[in-house]
Image 1: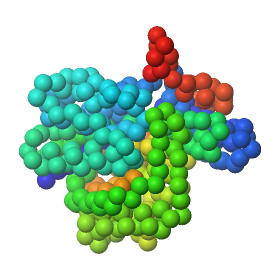
Image 2 (image 1 turned 120 degrees about the vertical axis):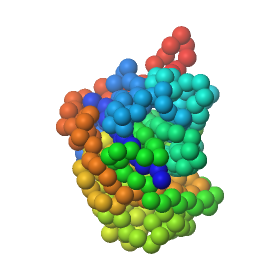
Image 3 (image 1 turned 45 degrees about the horizontal axis):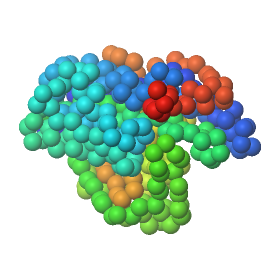
Length: 327
């Protein structure tokens, strides 16, 4: 058995009103988007989420057997996040670390790798998704480029688990449409073709394998394009739990943040985490357990916010230039 012993999320304090952003491009948008502070990076945001998850799990970092991270916006081409997060919690020595990336599906790549490690009897694993989506004033998606982090602690058992894993499914198709270079906004090809061909061929089999035909009470969804999230669920009646209207697109962090929010608010007895990305999809079925009460909830963080102007939003997101090297 594998349980989610603890769950946590981090949403940056700063938000930008999407109407202010859209007004600069003569577009239209509503809601708010999370903006990382100038001194926030992937490791600091990941650590904020992990702090809550580990505290709720009652597990010390030194007892972890693995630290797995997912990100598609880590600025380092060769550096990684996982080892730094592991060191932050004293998870050194005989500890497996791994950095997953390449597409939004990295979120469930890391999650399923963690589940497999716990099933193998290796011990508790910390899994973190963290991203700060790059912005380009000329890109249509600039108003929705969000940031944040989410974390889960997986273990073989817990006195009051946040959830229990009941199924895992995956489907790799090799269908790849979207691509993005480091630090740039994505290039999309034929959205309609992907919607009719890539998504159903990947998502359908993954959900069937994880859920065995059952319809969960609620679901969280990760997709490369936020507008596609609801359609990924197809004909499912599951409640789509999402904080997109307040956070924006946080890439691999979004399904973890949404999962934390779903468990904290008691969205349903049965949950599904469904993530579609270039090349396939994954689904993880969960049975909800005890609702976490300690630590900052996602709802708390959504309420505690400070609005910034459009100009501040762009300035805060500029890469820090340290001795001539963009970080």
